[in-house]
Length: 126
Image (cartoon, rainbow, N blue to C red; front, side, top):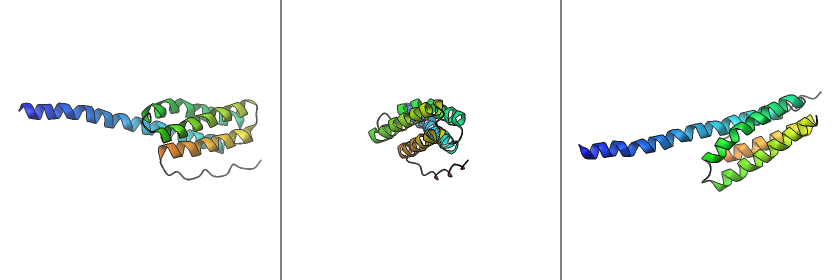
């Protein structure tokens, strides 16, 4: 009886670790989604800034979850740099460059997440 109880107690940390991984992946997916929306909003500086900012909110959790994966961390940090550049360009109303930076960020976030995501459709020409 004691052995079964010990086995059950040992299973609890494993389950907790597995469940902690799911939200981290969701944060990466949310960052990818918002970076893609920022890239598609290339003609609208306010939208690029809004979505890039939202993507950045999810990156801290994604970076924390990938502490043991140097390659993923490198892509997450590069994506973060691209998102910050996108926001900087959007603040100067350079929406085209802001959208390009957001697209680059999305690419790096996808590389970090390892998922396959379709490329965003091209931005409409004004």
